Image (cartoon, rainbow, N blue to C red):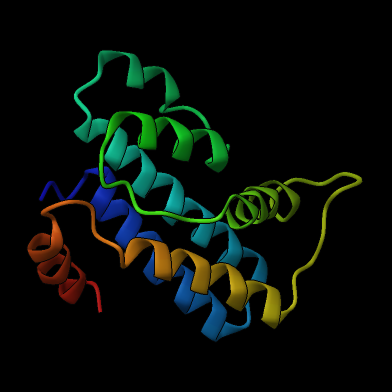
Length: 139
């Protein structure tokens, strides 16, 4: 696995989400959870080898990324649209000042982490061995 690739970065962001949750830094915990899912979806899009998938690499909208991944790669893990929307909202609403800015509590951050963890623990196709081996190195 490429240590600078999307899969490695997704695993790293999930680890950072957990660390921030443990530290009581709830907004960063939720943002890292969103980033973990986003990077895992971008990893899937890269696997598609579809030249048109490049146009989605700058998106942060998880619902759109998941739809595009499912359309291009059989075996893309399932995740509810509600959970994708929640994580996308947390990315923007905890990161940028404005009317929608919010401070998250422990339960909200924990929910974001658990959503990301569950999604990333569903390895795509035949990546199970790589996932288990690589995730051990991040613990």
